[in-house]
Length: 241
Ligand code: MLT
Image (cartoon, rainbow, N blue to C red):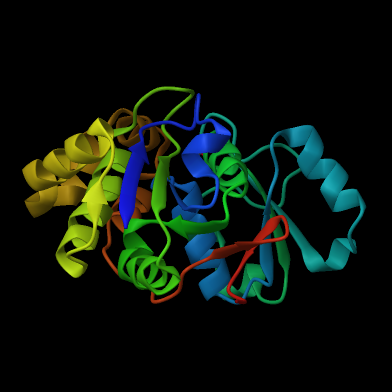
């Protein structure tokens, strides 16, 4: 199994994902939210490329079965039902609902991953469940970190590095196929004793702290809090195979 990692989705061409399993990571906070929402009974998550797309998707669906969620600059968007804090996606809010998710970086990264043969949504909260699914599928892997507005994000690289580390430990046939995969693994080794602290010190962590979302960061740093892995299917993330 051959593993590539990308620190941002920018510039990922078809040849980097064709026929492979894409694993999308946006720790703060889109892929954490995706795992929480589906674990709390959401039927599906439809990522929207922008705010306009999000509202037009909602218009086509039965309003009573939809929650429109996401953020701009970390804050809930005016007219949306939910922001992008994992605490908002509790059972009461999302059970049996379609969640339309329009976030700055994570939604676009998931849409990019959706172009691959398989696509999984990964966060620290569901890392082992994702690892198990990757091994079960058995394809080569492209790990896509969402990053921040086209740039590097420490928190996504750390989770990508942890996944690389665990894949190498799980299967002798795993080989790293680009420099970024080696770098991410090294970064994870440097911070693995205190991932939560690294998340708080990251650029987006500090930004969210200032907005009053410190408890979101602590939540997003939890390893294997959940046992599910969102899977891409026909334009949405679900738990269905
Ligand atoms: C994103 O997609 O950029 C985010 O998840 C941002 C956030 O929640 O603050």
